[in-house]
Amino acid sequence: MPAMLNRTVFFVSDGTGITAETFGNSILAQFTAKPRRMRRPFIDTVDKAWAVLREINHTSEREGGRVIVFITLVNDEIREVLTHDACKGLVLDMFSTFVEPLEAEFGVRSNHRIGRFSDTVKSGEYHDRIEAINFSLAHDDGQSVTNLAHADVILIGVSRSGKTPTSLYLAMQHGIKAANYPLIPEDFERAQLPSALVPYKAKCFGLSIDPQRLSQIRNERRPGSKYASIENCRMEVLEAELMMRRSAIVWLSSTHKSIEEISATIMRDLRTDRQGY
Image 1 (cartoon, rainbow, N blue to C red):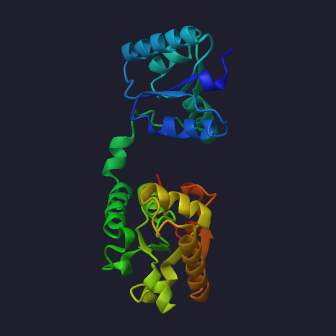
Image 2: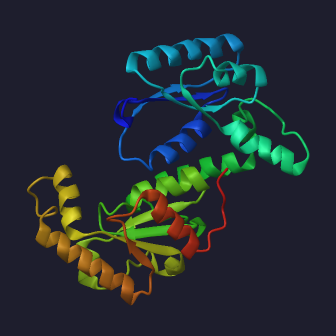
Image 3: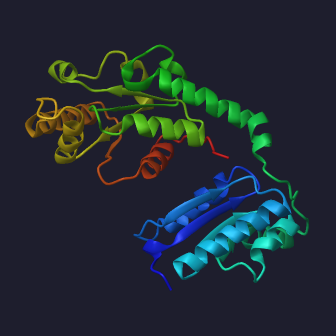
């Protein structure tokens, strides 16, 4: 049996494949290796399913062992092509794992509808999410301080502490209108929160970072600069943390946390009740 490092993983769906890939990657993240990933969306006919089956079997034969196959297929006839004994991959069927037990529990059948993405596009949640993304882009890195009253959260911290990716993740995954505002040396000289943020202090959430890590990140952008020097990074991080403490702003270090962990903490601490779909 080949080691996981040499395995190929297929994500097969009758829709976009986002659900299969998101769930599959969450499971694979529990293992240290990084297998090859093959995406096969819009497998919505039996003929397409047979084509994918041949590809799975060919890959399994070439690698000398079973490939891993995550599927989200609601049509029984299409599913049976890949779940049949003829398939030489290890098939993890999200439909039979989750939907069928719920059908039994609720005593009703699910809609069995292919690719619910079109429903999502028409939903209010989808439009809220697009609006949140536009808001976060317009308020990235302090480039605009207008309409901050409409922000759900304002991320503050020194440059390169993870504010932008966190803002966009909150917008894309949860429909959160997240602005972000950099704390700069001039703010530290004044020893007070930037005036534009004062009326919205209750919406502020701080990100800090280990100075050594910050220096590494900044050196990738501006190598050898004062901006990236370890001395400057230590000063900025220290001053930013002091400012957030003085202003009673909740903050955390992004050094060893994923964007998902940071976002979950922000939503918990700010009591943000938006839910993703």
